[in-house]
Length: 388
Ligand code: PMP
Image (tube, rainbow, N blue to C red; front, side, top):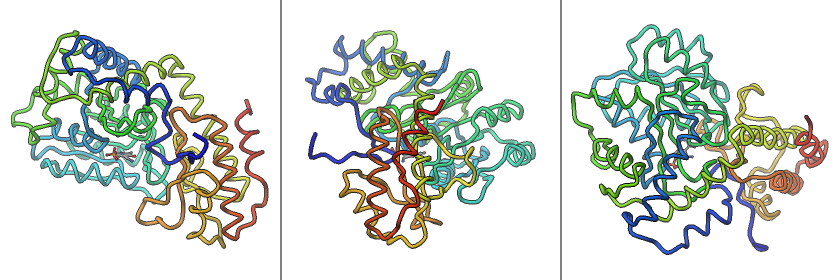
């Protein structure tokens, strides 16, 4: 471990050793009794992590984009309408996927770093017959978080299915599927769920499943079609063998371990830890004179930070200098501001030590790139973490 750099990008993240060691376990058959038990347990645990009482968990070999593709192809019939709350790069991706399946998509937009207000969303939602309301919980390109409870209430009022891209949020940001009325939430393994890349994870609530069952046209994607997958997920949960396409056996072992750890921490404690880590990181950046992409503090996610480069910084030198100081960070992603900011992921197994190492490495990187910090970030981060 000594020669390793700390990986602090918004996914893949650092993984717990017990999770990683599951990847090296002997691979069993996908219908071996031990695997059926593990997969069944993982499905039950997913429901608890997504805080869904009666949703259908679905685990596929793939990534977050496949989870988005799966949600779209199963819930869209050509000619259906969707309203996308657009907060950046991944909302644009969801729009493109929905359109691929013949959906007519409208967007409510906001300036980069902002988010549409509930009033703005409601105005458009009430004007059209939208089958779907789609939002990115945390847009990884801007670090902006959306008001999921508020949007869920709007979707209920106007009778739209509410889909949440939770790829950079689930198991880090508060999400209460049943209580808030979220119809489908999805994520990928490599983020706050804490498992190496390779799994697409979804929980579909009762209304989403009913909408799927009421389809009049076939699903326009063979692999992701729930007609193939629902019986498989139901079988594993009933501890029965089933096959449609080979599950990623070792990743499912790893998923079950990580979900167990998440539930042991407790969802409330986990959300609170992510808030404290985020507060520490953002306070460190602020003390060093760095602004952030989210235009208001309440728009800023807890799973990542998106600090803006300060004036006078030699941007080309900065990230390599941070890497030299032991921490790997991500550059900008949103096309409109790509060269103006960088991104720090702090989710999953992340600890305050990781945040302090990161803030310290950023401080070093700033100094090496020609910027003098007004105040040290590390003390500010530490104080903010332990503030009540
Ligand atoms: N949505 C969001 C919010 C994301 O952050 C990502 C990945 N960064 C995706 C979707 C796509 O996930 P993947 O890269 O696993 O396909």
